Amino acid sequence: MNQQMLIKQIAKKYHGTITHKQLIANNVSSYSINQALKSGLLERTRSGIYQEIDTPEDIFYSLQQKYKQGIYSLETALYLWNLSDQYPFSLDMTFPRGYNHANLDFDVKAHYQVEKFQHLGIMETKSFNGNTIKVYSPERTLAEILRICHAVDIEIITNAYKAWAKSNKKDINALMEFAEKFKVIDKVNNYLEILL
Image (tube, rainbow, N blue to C red; front, side, top):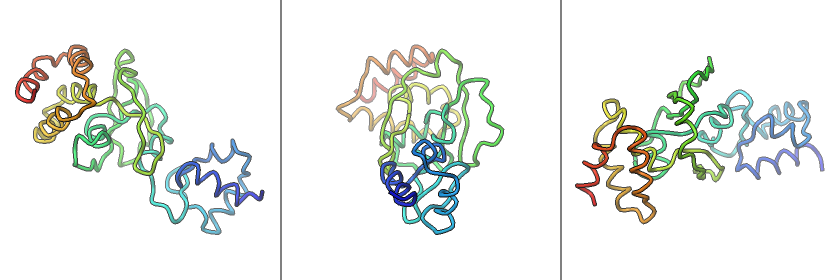
């Protein structure tokens, strides 16, 4: 199989968005990557991230491939879990405290979390292009967003709680555990008393 066909096959596997590392791991040469860029098979959307020319960018997957330690959180997580219809123009990503990436993309809003909370409630879901991404669970997100409720439109929070309450996948026990960890139990109870 020639290198250009191999690139197409790899791109298909990842729904049109591929990384330099994925290409190299599949024995695609740097020369072939440059040829794919010149021929219009691929375009570079971000450093180390390529997109098939006729495929819209999978920004959620692209950014998580670029910032491997980032987990989608807060308003972005609400959107990804269909708990908000507000498209986040800056994507919330939570990183371990002390993580320093000097050149974060302009469309990333970085948040930092202590180690003991960083890995709690991480789940995988599919991006809108079908790639696997990491995002905090709905329950963690609903509890954590109340810690910064002064920075988030109260209507977004209220609508998220309403959508979650209607869901048949809600986990009240998990929500209460996260509320306790994030010290927002009274705020969560206020929402639950009204909605449940």
